[in-house]
Image (cartoon, rainbow over all chains, first blue to last red; front, side, top):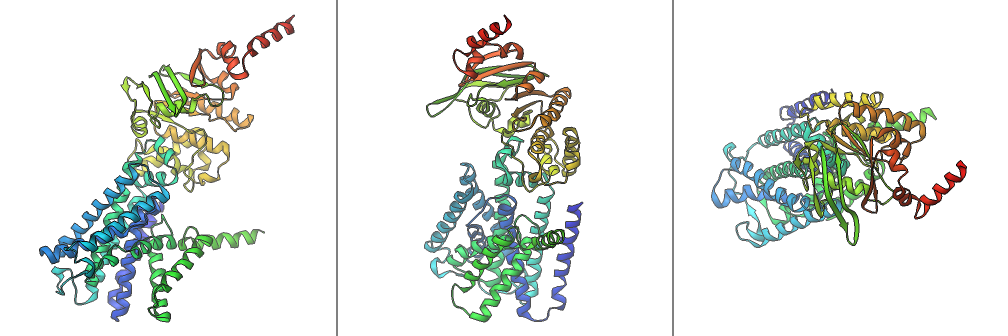
Length: 323
Length: 249
């Protein structure tokens, strides 16, 4: 029952978002909406593995960057259409995710050890992409401007909106499915107590591999979108820790292991980053410091994320009423 | 049904389980007792795949299962519970039990329905939507039993499901265990509560310092000299006997 209501809520929210191109007239506002959706996609992909699976990755840039570089390199070096690159980027990111997952989960790495391994992989990929020639090295890759639908580039940014809207919808529907499926039940059981899950017949390794694959796929797809939207990539954008941090901040602030948490988190994070840019300009580090403060506040007062603010406030007022 | 032959396991220099064999017939209710540190829980971990035995074999329903993964062994029909209860905190009682039910039911709805049935059987029927973390110790023990039963096991291994309960709670849980057996599930219990061992089990194995020192009907085992000395120390059997004869005369 809860699940059906959640599906309805999800479709309503995405339906409302879909009305934006019809009444939003200014291009910068449209870009903001696109950016929020793109960050929500990235955050939701982290949420699959971190929020539902309890495996905290500190290196989601490894998947994101692989997706981004795949679409760029295929286009520039081999002339392959970016729509094919979209699928290829997702799949190659899935492959990277499976390799990292295998290396970690096969040997039972959990918690901070898993976080460190993912971080290390992302860093290795960053250094590699900096030193080989087909990625353009440190100079980066500039995707040639050719604004056509068949080229996954759009004159009007409403085209980008529909692409990211659809990608987000698929990702959020997948997460909704996780919440009501056997795979999801097993994944959350593994998160909450690995030994107990194992005793009840859950194949912990395969469940984690499933989660890391899904998570990697959607991160890779987000990377492809990034490349097509900004048309420029370099190693520190694609594989830098900024992406890894952003993808985990979004669901933690919004609400880990919840369907809508990443959407809320994405909205808040983007709003904050725009705000800081407006008031302090481009002073490096200010945005990150503000994220840090926000993160501390959330962890202290709303450990289940902003999505739980209603229940927390209600609970408080109820307790006060009882007292 | 279960045939364990000469399994051993060492941790460093310590022989936790040393050349232990055990046979369990289908439909029986058997217990495994022994002083603290005797290797009972390690024995459970060995036959359910949590640890790999150094040597020896485990056969279950005629099938060799030595060294298989716990998930494969659960699939084959042998499931354990934990001495220290391990609820999935943050999930409801129903969701907790459904994790076990999913082993045989792919659909979420079937698993949740099955979870309700099992919950009613163990007396958690009125707490289905409660957070598992909010249960009392007795409630958590019931949950532990319910999750294991939800996997539709042929053989279930209960690791001290009565430990930490007060006498009235024990009196409530014993019928639950008996009902499980009556529904056709074979049971192996690790238990310290002697009242339960005596009243529930038909056959008892005694483990001490990793070795099987005695087996038999509970009444006989309880008066076995080696067993008394394992629990109370060397010489105690003789002293007890002389006290008894003195008291009698």
